[in-house]
Image 1 (cartoon, rainbow, N blue to C red):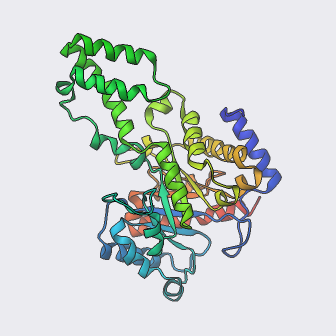
Image 2: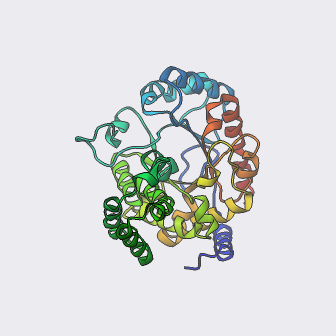
Image 3: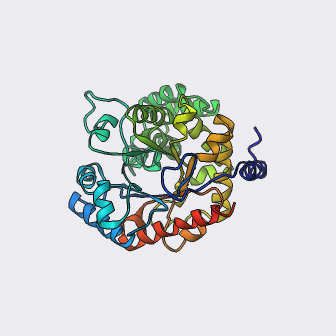
Length: 370
């Protein structure tokens, strides 16, 4: 498979023209149709009462908006309260929204029950009315590593015994440069503190990666969630280093292939993929540019077509996530192949998120011209 941006783009648009990609229905639920999906990830914010109040303000501003699907992902503690609030009949009578509002969980575990302190199973989520679950978010894949990795005093804690332990751990991993093993063996033998300090940065980054969730863990969560009838939003994305090394496509290919391994085409049709470049997430960061988003979404859809065929590629929704806000949503939603957005900080402000939701209708308008 040729995965250069140009080849991906040509292949994507050829199939898009031939198969009328992204047909959008007049009413929700029409078979074979794609509807824009705007999802708010509240992360670790808002107690249950505040979450319900925010949802009410969002719905009030979005009264009568039916051409897009809306997802809300409160913390675990807010799921039950929001589930009670967003009953379809109530939403229809109060806000004229119907069945286009979905309750989402920010994460889950891959076992149904057991001695897993602090974890929440897909079965538990389904029991309280959760519709969808975010899996593989960058906060889970890598960013949590900074809390479980080294402290600023890492160099002082490097010892030959510690390095020997790290050497054993690295030996079990695939694709590690043999020179890395040689370097660590040398450090352990020399017991030179200055040299050990020079190795600290390498080990810090390595441990950060291993402290986050692996692709294998993400895959297990996908299967466990699907088994309970939850729809999965599978996240993928590269960090700044991977983009600088031109390894974006290689990394995304691995994340998506492993995440979807063993999932049937029929089930994948109901899934959502969210592209969230790690370097574009967080306070002070900037969203990816239009061309960057476009080429990656083309690549992802082309990869899905390679794995599951044209029919699945023509119906699966692919979102963008990474500093989405009212100022850039119009540009993002105007990109062919972008079917919505996974929104972080802006979803905590009712007016901002409502404005983002309304821009979702642009996808409907654009695709109706295909």
